[in-house]
Length: 351
Image (cartoon, rainbow, N blue to C red; front, side):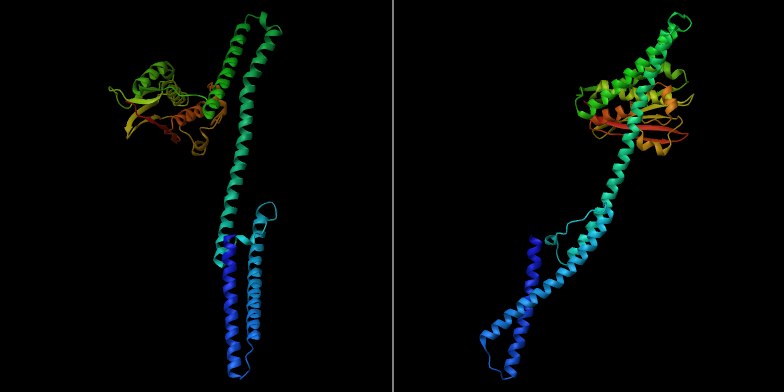
């Protein structure tokens, strides 16, 4: 209501000025016309002039404001589902205020359009996510069902297939368990239920241990696992060792799975202020730019068929992102097709 008071005050002053002008006019008329001055008549005339001027000014101001409000209301109504917009005249200021209001309305329309686009994208991602979840869960279930049906319908007595089908069913069960475990991990990370076991440890030593464990897998594709330096001195970080191992294993394993034969995976560790920056780099096939923004989404796959053949759940990078964010840090990815991919994240330096 403060704006309304300012508007009324301005119109009141204009009405008063109008009345004073009329009063001066009457005085001049009486003085030069040699008319007898009736004080009561003079005061009444002045009051009438004041009221008349005030009402006329207020009326024209009201018409001007109403016209602009209607234009703005129509503009908003057309943008937002043809809904009528209430007109609140008590929230308007003078002419400058109307221009400012129009700019704000334009900004509002623009921001709402962006929000609608964002919600449309979210809805699209939601549908895609539900479809992916359904597919990821149904695939191993249908496989198990097929193997079991075959075994029940005589395959169990067939020694040429019974053990093979049982092993395939077991593999599908393991895949199903892995998907459920990964989904549970992400849910716990997002909800904050999963508490980190923070400790100081030598991350260089951890990387060497992981390299040793994955050496045979890398050797099948003649991929070299290298460190940028020897790192003879410890590089301590303060983090959850088990979860950071999970992050590194995922990134290194992906570089092996999707790397080219005779390629290289290299890890670099550097101090930066109070952090330790970890880089995982390979010279593999690389990732196309349009895939990078969605790379850390649940079940997002660049090559869906190949990814499933490799045995991944489609949740690895989503878990990696959540683990790093749980450490109050972030992870980024850079890639160039045909040249390779670089993942970079940081952790708080330890003591």
